[in-house]
Length: 453
Image (cartoon, rainbow, N blue to C red; front, side):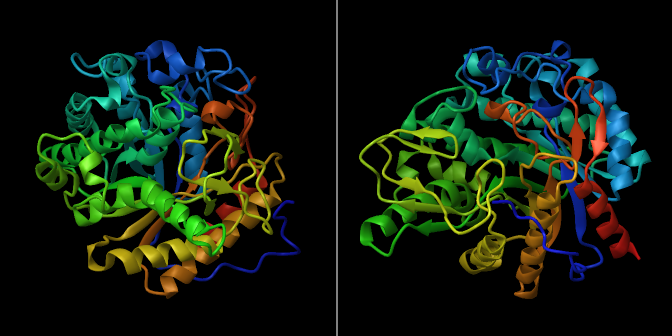
């Protein structure tokens, strides 16, 4: 069932004049030019048959490395204020540390210049899952040393482009990188450690805090993080389902938000983290943020564990997990099978405000989008319209949200799905690399034009 609009969509409610509008991408998903950077964990992962559902790789992807001027023109013509992209760690430091790859850093220098010339604010994310393969071979995110190497890399990037970057993001979705990459093995680096993956969570959070300090030492300001969050709904009112949902909520939401915002892990989690001095680590992790980014796609319904392996949203979940995600019925679904529940965004944002109170900095929606086929993507228009209205309801309820970034500017390499899922406002023919703005691109452009008027 598609979320197709029934007739003309009424105008969106008025957002604050200084509200930040943007679109998002990530380096590994669009850049290509794999021969112009060091190897990443995703290069190794995609080389293994069966790891990517359509058998593809991101060696070329959208060829953004060579076509960035064309893509910046699309961003400019769309009329957004900002462009969120990620810097590829192995493109800047091919082995994760040591000598800088000058040509790689030059690319981001040119990209930032092109954005500034177009009147678009560059918003770089320093890590969007493409760990240098050499860092992985030295222990990866299971090793505390990786957090130190990441801070050094952050300083290198800030020294080169920091004079023109008004807003920074340290990490993207450490929860998914921990769960999908290290606990379940569905993403690179393909580890299946289950709860032995928890050190990955701690070391990413530590890397974030060290990177915040490194960025500020280099003169950077307006620093945040992009964490994925969503409401967790129990499958029933029963005690077992409620307990399972609470556990899942801690694992995917509070495990990553609490240390950043209140300086401690949820009860029972801190003692599971590898640290010679957890209190000192938490002081680093909880370095004050200028804003907090939320990537939102869907709520999750969770119940007590089922007595067998389950399939959920394309993932194979082992029976050892103490929870079991369930299908959410009664809502439209995207082509990815994700439920379309705009009201869950309002629920999430007001819950964050209520939970963290004065400790919560201003919020930015750093990702929100959906996968649909076709150039006349009316379903995506309905999705975005619905979520922007839900966001506005949160603003009316007093939640301090300062911006909204659509995922994504263009169709790209969708990780383990390959090119099977299309999240873009712009269609990309991955054979010819031709870009074609979709109906949703034109709709958003008109929304932004009306806002300026």
